[in-house]
Image (cartoon, rainbow, N blue to C red; front, side, top):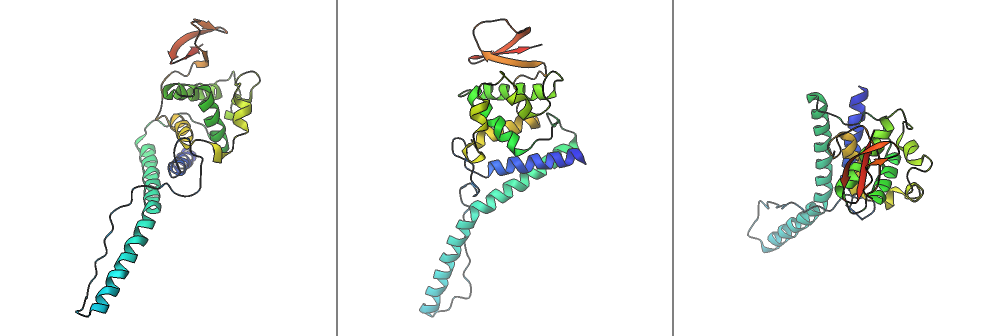
Length: 223
């Protein structure tokens, strides 16, 4: 039951993030404007009376406009339901959930901003940084919360900037990326022992850790 609640919450959070404007645009509370579906209205019982015919056509046109206005909201609601169903199906099927961690959206917003600044311009780098954060959360050598890991002294230089950002100022693409790393959908490192990274300068070791891989301009190190 605990896992089910966590999965349902994650699905709801991902559906929320997917329903708002993407990438550099801030989180907003209205639904994303998707392509509207073609909506037609059948006009029946049209008499030979010209006036009645005109009225029927006007009503049909009004119905089309109303339906088109409603289409984006309907599409967002339908997508949310599909995401929820997929999460439930994954749980029943025993698919990997990813990191077993109960999070809040406040933590995800903070994490999204740190990931954005630490690996700006590199999708794979952003996924890898998010994995390092969660690897630290699960490691006994570090705090066991996202905020605890990110706020640890002399660890993430971008924390101060990230902690000042609101949800409305945070990229929904970055929120989605972090959620998908937690769920296991996104993974680049595939190694729970990768606990550090820095700008690549060719070093093979870093504070007792060994170079694991280089992603664009960043080097990642494992114990």
